[in-house]
Length: 449
Image (cartoon, rainbow, N blue to C red; front, top):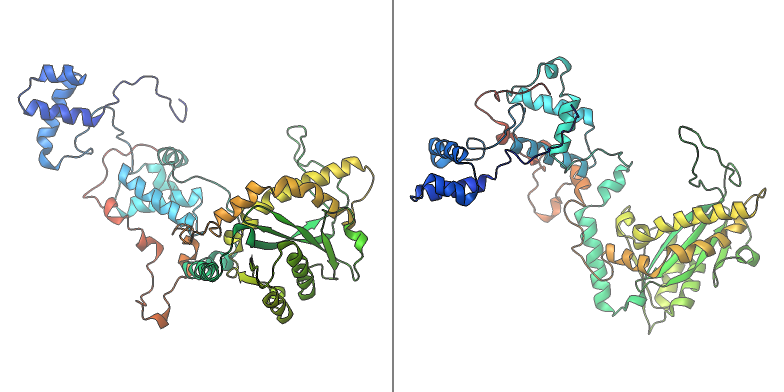
């Protein structure tokens, strides 16, 4: 017998509402045979329902009054499984998800605690069976099995209600002081591009390790700074090369209008960011009479005194994201860098095919960016990033409780606000499914799952 049997007929699939309406008509005096014909139900089935309904009285429900085939070997009732499904989903939302084996152990512990009848195999293994877990997942589509993405504790806990509300309050205040059009709201972020990429290729099925010919085993990284506005326009990027001195031919093949700088660390530094701001002022037309808003992460290179003086003199308002929250709040992270990395990978693969036997260098990266940038940072993608983050159009209520759920494990009230300082409830106490599991005795007829 297959693990998931497909129903071939509609036999014994009963709509309980139809029987309840028929029951009421019979009680009003209509004959049983006539009501069965009107509602298209079997007369004897309707008679059995009326007898069950009469015995149940006013406290009837689907558990004590049911029609059709009813599962008799389930360990948990439908309501209990829904509560268990809710608990499992909540654990995953706060980044403490349960593995399939842990779910099976939890099911066994619940059946033990609430004295439910379960198969003998559960007692031997001290966990529910694999077949029960498979059936549970089919009956409850809300949870699903997947590979968890590693997330640092600081990132998970920093994206909390306090930080998010503070950012949107600051954004609202800034946009209230100055009237910014979408072409005046910019986002800046940097990303690293290496000379070695890992393209996807098609190979013979069954081969575990597939080789390719990259330009080198280890690549050299070049930092590229991108800035784009809510209208969907992009400013030519800044390239930061891992060199002591910079020469103009470094970006000879790069996007039109792009510039570069160099430092041994190859990361954004105070001097590099000031170079970018001068470049940014040129393309954004920022001035004391035409102010622009630049939202960016709170890196130390962005808040040097010379940088702040330059922004103040040229009408550039800087607004930083809360620490470790840019992965949710930054437009480039939400809809820009994902497509960009894919197109860069494809462009590097094309370069290797066009230059067989040659090694890609850092001076070829500007040309790669020139090819990939128009394909990834399209106007639709850029506008979608600003919309998904609630920056433009402004939406301070974009993120719901489920989005900030990971910070639940470290949330504590501020003692200086005079709020209730009680410790938040534990996870098992917050999702209270205990009453639904309480029974007067064992669940009759639990099958061999």
